[in-house]
Image 1: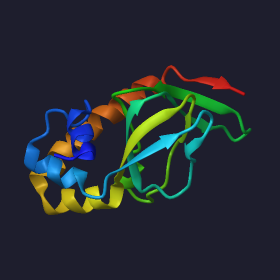
Image 2: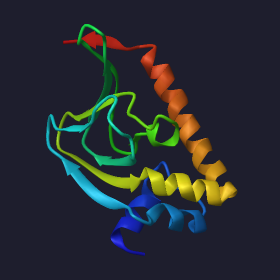
Image 3: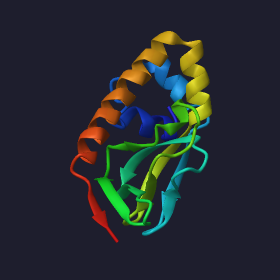
Image 4: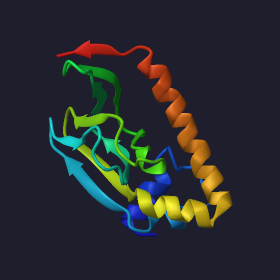
Length: 148
């Protein structure tokens, strides 16, 4: 197993996934680092990536029509960001910004989507994991606060 495969298999989001399915995940995976205040992705831009946070912190939020940022959640090691690649119109619904130096593994959303469609067992497992993440985000959004 190479470094990126190990990092993915040890990440909590994928930790209990079958090894055959992990092989599908690791194709086209790469490492990425973000500096403090660096925007990882912006609302309404094309969504094509899925991020496994290994270290650091990421603020996830959205902008009101007046331009104020609503902080939904701050995420850290062991968490993931990015599920908008799964559903049309394949654009980000939130903005993600590193609030401190952040290390991630980036997965290609298009590749994951094709692999899920071609392998229903993998697709079900992936969707179950993502659905749990979406539920957690919805619950967190109920506690959102406006920041400037």
